[in-house]
Length: 534
Ligand code: MCA
Ligand code: AMP
View 1 (spheres, protein in one colour):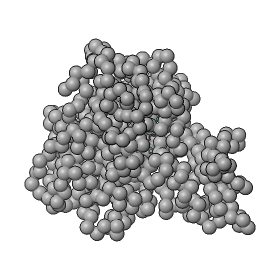
View 2: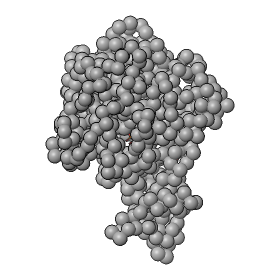
View 3: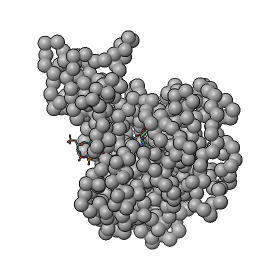
View 4: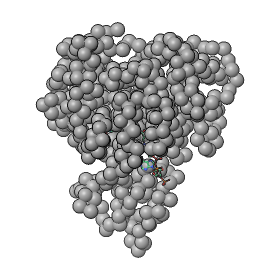
C-alpha cells in the first residue's frame, strides 16, 4: 500500500490522456484531507491502490461468515451465504461462455438476486453495465448497441424480448441467473486497472456515453467514504436508492460490502417503509437524494431518523432550508458531491461543521482545483475514471492535462468556489443539465423528442426550481402556425415511448418564439429566468 502523507505534493495516482488540451493549472495543494481523517491517522492515510474492489470485499467477507450481511425480500443473508451464492452465479455465467472483459447489462428493482448478480459478475472479471429500469426501449437499445453486451440479467417487464429483438445471440436471463451450474471459475482475479463497470451518462450534446470505471476506481471511491464517514462493520445501512446509479451502487452497496457492515435493501422509496426498516433492523445510516429528505421532512415520524448515527444526502443540491429543517429536529445531514465518472469527490466532514449549502472538503485522495477562467471544478485522483467507452474524442474533451505533472484533470461541468476555510460550494453548472429528484435530464435530448410532435414548431426545456424535486422539467413550446399548442398531457403521452418518466416535462408554457442569440442558439438561461419571474 502506498503510504501517503497529506503534506506530500502530487499524491494522487497519475494517468495520462494523450491529446488532452494542456492548460496552466496551479493546484492548491492544501486539500484539507485531514478534515476527513480520524485522529489516529495523524494526518496520513493509506491509499487502497494497488488493489481491487473484489479482492478487498472477499478479504473482508470471508472472515466471520455467519455475520448478517444483506437483508432483502424479508430475510437476512450472511457473509458466507452471499459469497457462496456469488461464486455459484459466477460458475453459471462462466459455464455459459462468458469470459473476462465481457459486458453484462444488469437491471432490476433492488433485491438479493440483483446484488448477488452484480457482485458475481465483478468477481468473474465481467464488466457490469447497470441500467435504469425505467428507461424506454429506445434508451435501452442505445446502451445495448453502444456497449455490445454478451449477456443481460434483467428483471424489468418486456426487457428480455426487447433485448433479444436487438440481438438474438445475447444470453438473456433474470438476475436470479437460472442458468445451468458450472464448476467454480477463477474468482477475484481482476487487476486494479481492469474495467469493472460502465455507467451511462449523457453529455451536453450527443447520446449517452459509457463512463468506464476500473476495479481500482471503484475501490478508491468506496474506500474514501468508508474512511471519511467512519463506516465500520458495526454499521447497518438502510439502502432504498436504486442499484443502477453510482449513489446506490458505488457508494451504498459497494461501501457496505467493503466496510463489512450490513445493509437493509428496499426496492423503491416509501418514507413509512424507510422509517419502519430503520427501527426494525436497528440501522445506523441512511443515504438519500434531497427529494427523499424533502418527503421525510414532511413525515410525522421524521425525528425517528435521529436514532441513526449518519444521514448522508447527495446527487443534487440539498437546500439550506431543508438542511435547517433537519437541524431544527437535531439531525445534522451530511451533504456530499460525486459523479458517475468519479464516484465520490467532496464531502462535509463527519466530525466538525456540516455546512449548509456547501459540499465540504475533497475526500482523501481527491485533488480539486477551480479553473481560474471559468470556476469549473476540475478533479483528479484514484477514483476518477480514465475515459468513456469507445469515445476517444469525448474522453479528450473531458480532461485537461496538467503542464507540470502527468496527471490530467477531469472537467466536472460543475462550477464551484472554495471559501477561506476550504469548504467547497457548487455555484452552478457549465453543462446544460437539469437534476430532477437526483436524476439527470439533459435538455437537448428532451427538446429533440418533443420537437417531433406534429403541432410543435420549436421547443426547448429548462429547469424550474421545485421544493420537492429540486428542479422540474418545463417545456417552452412554439406551436406550428395555424395549430394550437398541445396540452402537457398530450406532450407527455407523445414522448413517453422515447423518454424515461423523469425526463418528461411536468409543466408546459406556450410562447410565440424561443429566445435565441445571433447564431440561432436557444438562450436557455433566459427561459430559466422567465421561470424565476413566474
Ligand atoms: C420518478 N418520477 C420522477 C422522478 N422519479 N419525475 C421526475 N424526477 C424524478 N427523479 C416520476 C414517476 O415516474 C411518476 O410519474 C411520478 O414522477 C411520481 O412518482 P413518485 O412515485 O412520486 O416517485 P418515486 O417513484 O417515489 O421516485 C422518486 C425518487 C426517485 C425516489 C426520488 O426518483 C429516485 O430514486 N431518485 C434517486 C435516483 C438516484 O439514485 N440518483 C443518483 C444518480 P407518473 O406520475 O407519470 O407515473 S446521481 C449519482 O449517482 C451521483 C454519483 C451522485 O452524486 O450521487
Ligand atoms: P451523475 O452524472 O448522475 O452522476 O450526476 C452527477 C452530477 O450530480 C454532478 O455533476 C453534479 O452536478 C450533481 N451533484 C451530485 N451531488 C451534488 C450535490 N451534493 N450538490 C449539487 N450537485 C450535485
